[in-house]
Length: 159
Image 1 (cartoon, helix red, strand yellow):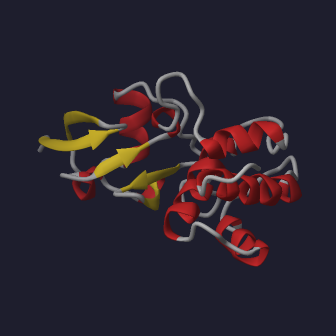
Image 2: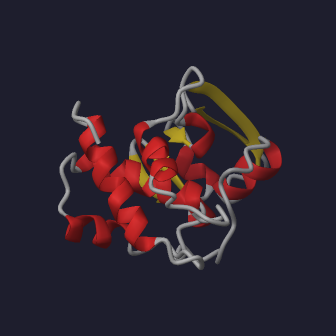
């Protein structure tokens, strides 16, 4: 039975009437046209579907829409504000921490979630937080450098 689920999406009110058991990933991509969130494994192992839910990292491929009621969801499309890239996005570009780009939105949101809860992570903490994000292109060392520089930029320093 369809239900209307209300939440905030990238800073704006949103509502979707659908089966509340549908996964957030498919609602974002199919119903709302936000294709930056990617389908990877469908089992929350690869990180391609990562979004922020109330500021915390969430795997949208296993998040039923009913859990989103009243939540604040941020997708990759919601990070850049006023045409300006988020510091994490800027750092990923500066360090060329992307190649094919498929995993990049999830990695950027994973890094953003890490920096929200730990604004000055060690390299080991960065590696641990990013461990659940698979990148077939092997950009991991550049990802660590990018997250480190984003942390510096977000704290007001120069990367």
